[in-house]
Length: 313
Ligand SMILES: C[S@@+](CC[C@H](N)C(=O)[O-])C[C@H]1O[C@@H](n2cnc3c(N)ncnc32)[C@H](O)[C@@H]1O
Image (cartoon, rainbow, N blue to C red; front, side, top):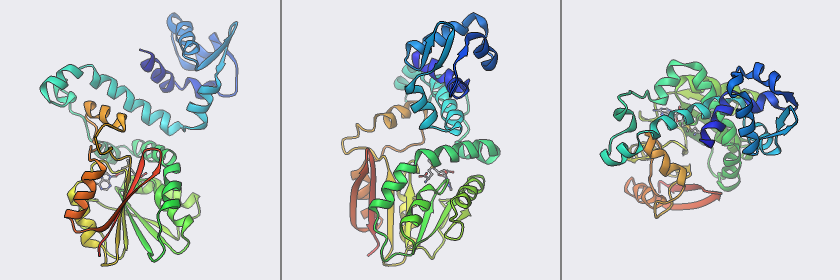
């Protein structure tokens, strides 16, 4: 119940609206559109959770709320992630049936869940929220990747399903000799182009609308897959085919630990129909070998983020 209340607070943008101000219950009620029957209890619950502070009739954000919901997150995260959370909550209502039947929660509830790709193709706002959210979430991982990936001797990176281009931009900044191309669906590429332009990297990082499961364009000596869900054999085979003999494939993600128990959120998300794969780092390495990659190396580049590289020769 506490989690659901926090998500409601995010969806109503409580912390954003209280950012930098102390307001009365009445003023907050008007601003949020929360009925007076629940208003005080709702705000007091957030005080009890340590997310708001209260003095007599005034409420304001706690330092924790400021850090977690304002400093570390953006409005795109507020909109996109909190709506994903609400869907997950709905899915979890039938968890026992999911566990017993082996079926997907949405089919048990008689609902058809649209794939996020189809939804982004149909709704430009969804593509914007999703892409902008990942741009911010992955900034640190992108920096870690750029710090660890040695691109000397390489000149062109194909960032497959590259989203906002956050990884490509970090690599381009760290390696002035590198050109990069972000391949993704059209609506995502549109958002990526704006971000790339804003960072002044349009001459070195371009975008290409396409399908990652089609043949990959030639001319790149590095093919990179970051946070693409299940990697599977097809992307690895496509990369192997498109790379020159001295080329390299790079996989980056929070890949499952060898015993399959971490990261926990990846496991839990399976119960609500997540598209994230559960391939372990060991399985990925053996899949890469089966696809013909050699000199495979894996490296922990930050918290639970791993980079796995393989060379074609
Ligand atoms: C979780 S995001 C990761 C984005 C980026 N690689 C990053 O690390 O920030 C996954 C991306 O895969 C893209 N994607 C999924 N299926 C795709 C497909 N069939 N063809 C092209 N892009 C696809 C999505 O649009 C999305 O931008």
